[in-house]
Figure (spheres, rainbow, N blue to C red):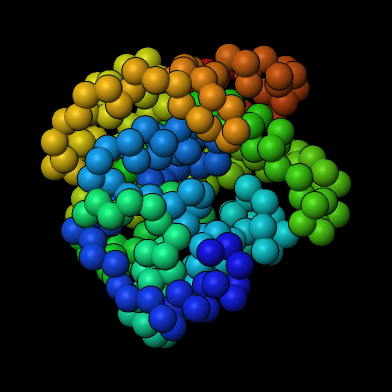
Length: 268
């Protein structure tokens, strides 16, 4: 389903999946969105795809296609959905996602970072839509974006193969500001922090199941989790990331996002 031919076939031959709830995980890159998705999809009533939903549809653009891996704020206008034929587009995406998903539970879980730019579209055409937003320490997030993004591989030679740390901090800031701007228009919205999830995963996951009106299931957290090819227990990795930053880089992050970091009580 990552191949254009299969996506076109799914759109033309597939039927609309039977879904009682559409659940969208939002958050910045490197904020624990994949970890959260891996934990939630263990529930017997949840079905999901093996990666970001944008990889399994031709209806939503990825920032990588614009040459900006892990920096959607640099191509934010291109990420948004055009006003025309939105219902037709939504149905096309649903058919393609239905083909890519495993399981047949009534709750469909999707996670694509760039969907922060498309919440109005998702809220209107994927009903009922539930949004779960996870926030993480912006210092750790900025370091992770810089470490994992390789712009030169996507034919972006502006920064070579390594973004300036200020750009990465700007992406964290843009994500939180955009989500906060849109959250009041979402009927079903739940927020949590990566720090709370890693400290008390059972409690945080249970809160989400209550938000989704799903019955509790035992044994969902007492295992290691496979995230980005590495299997490990749920734990807070902030310190390892922040220790990779120099004092000068910390200053650059503060110049870009210091006020918002202080608002969330995040420190280095």
